[in-house]
Image (cartoon, rainbow, N blue to C red; front, side):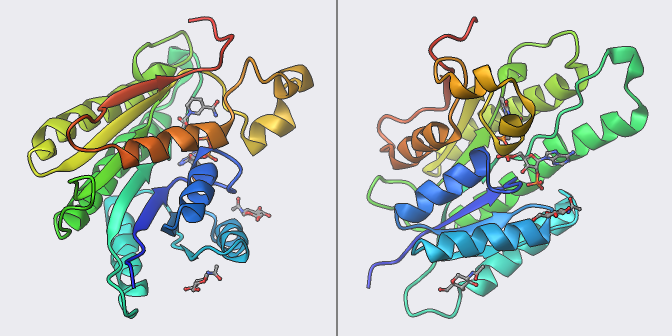
Length: 255
Ligand SMILES: NC(=O)c1ccc[n+]([C@@H]2O[C@H](COP(=O)([O-])OP(=O)(O)OC[C@H]3O[C@@H](n4cnc5c(N)ncnc54)[C@H](OP(=O)(O)O)[C@@H]3O)[C@@H](O)[C@H]2O)c1
Ligand SMILES: *[C@@H]1O[C@H](CO)[C@@H](O)[C@H](O)[C@H]1NC(C)=O
Ligand SMILES: *[C@@H]1O[C@H](CO)[C@@H](O)[C@H](O)[C@H]1NC(C)=O
């Protein structure tokens, strides 16, 4: 029996954004999916919906994106899939959590700075550590890789703006981390990639809160299902020609 690899996604929310789309697409592509997010009940509902479509998904809720809770989630993930007859290996991991503080600089509190750094940077470091330690246990796959670690970035990964001092600091931190990891672990055939999402994503939240004209206009916003396709493409790249960074934006984006 062929082994079904595991994708770990952190930052799934309700499943109606990029994290959810990636989980759905990888599940269809034959991956087992480990879901990490903070709302246990919505995570359970989303995992059950993946199972109903023929997937093998399981929720691993955490109370916040701390080093300790992410470590515990990975331990639980390995434990959950350890009993089967085929070897379940974590082969792909997506760091998608990225809370934003969008405020003028002088209105930002110390608490908000800490929250931004804790989730975007400390959480991202912990997730990367657990992913890389898991990949190091794997042999090479058909593409010559031990695993692929993906990061969801934003326009703010490259450009600060009037309301993004805190958010951009977090996103630049993640981009710097991902580039450092790509160089350090490429030598071990571990693929690290960063995606700059340069535009508004049609998430569940956006459907509820944004202008209906924007929601309906496919020229101006990113469909998270199409971002997920780019993620699957990155994971399927061969080690002889792989991408560290790509950027994705809708056709009519001004940039
Ligand atoms: N939406 C956009 O227009 C847009 C544009 C460019 C880039 N991005 C990036 O895309 C990723 C999110 O994807 P998405 O917008 O499609 O939504 P999504 O997949 O539903 O994921 C958003 C995730 O960020 C986490 N998050 C939100 N607020 C948070 C907070 N206050 N503290 C800790 N974590 C928080 C949530 O974590 P839980 O799962 O724990 O709830 C949520 O799952 C983020 O990295 C974001 O920076 C978004
Ligand atoms: C968690 O998600 C459910 C919907 O699945 C929602 O009713 C509830 O308010 C959420 N809890 C928190 C703490 O956000
Ligand atoms: C989905 O099914 C798998 C096994 O088929 C199981 O391990 C997992 O717990 C299920 N998830 C949910 C949310 O029911």
